[in-house]
Image (cartoon, rainbow, N blue to C red; front, top):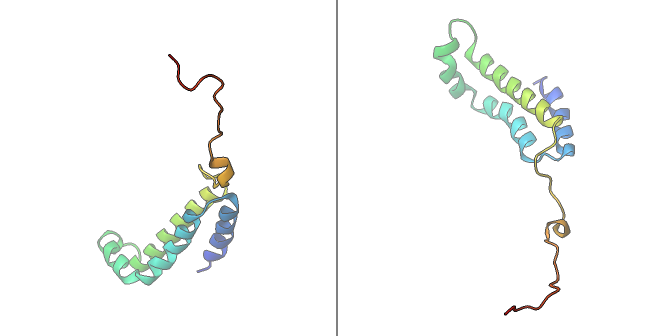
Length: 102
């Protein structure tokens, strides 16, 4: 849970830079792993049983991936920023010539 002390300010910074869904999803990742810890640990059990605790490995992987994702989103601009409706409207061009040409 102490990793959340680093992840929450990074998510706030990412929200200020224009990201909307990515920081919320990355913050939810460790909480989802915590909620479904036994199921995820059962999936990791055959891989890491002899070396590491599967539940601790699941928590560490979720916090690590969330931290890397939040670092990327906090210091990168989103590809598309929300704009106003006026900027989205195409500029109307007036015809200078006749409507029908023969």
